[in-house]
Length: 238
Image (tube, rainbow, N blue to C red):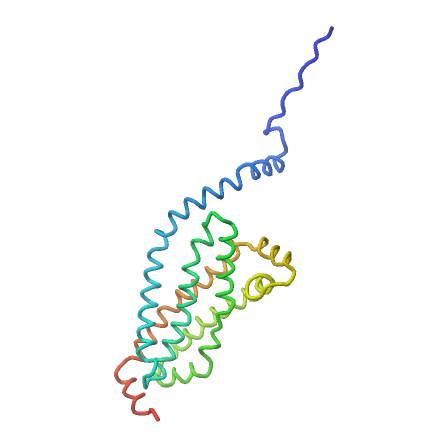
């Protein structure tokens, strides 16, 4: 009786590379991502501490002067503070959502925070707080041309971020964020297909524009709050 030879075991190294990659992706992908999220959930608050402190300080200062000039006689100061506070409220909202959007162990919670970030950027509209009044405020405080140009550039960058988000995420915004599609499966699939990574590209662009706006706002505050400008505004008030 002839002895049958056992078939040699097929090793993973013998499998074509694309097949092997798919195998390891299925075996290690979700687990590796979960571990990475747990680690980042511990590290991110420390990494973001300096940004959070700077953002909170800018917010508190701007809020203080916005309240101080709310019913005052200096419209230029009031306008500049309103623009700054309008932007910083959105920035603080996004900052408060970032860590959970990136690292929360529950996928639904991560995507919910990402959707709120999207909505915050989507609904931010510089035109509501600038326009003709901004040009008048520049004239009142006699802002140098370089500062006028830089302010317009930074606000333009913010508008570009908002318009990019409006274009790229229009469907998910209408289906599962600002509005709710009556077809529940359309809602569900819009949520499931949402890429948190893409949301954070948009959020990163928004924060970059915010960072560019901070020195501009500081310069506007310094100029508009100087004694000669305040005296001029007071004399020219109706």
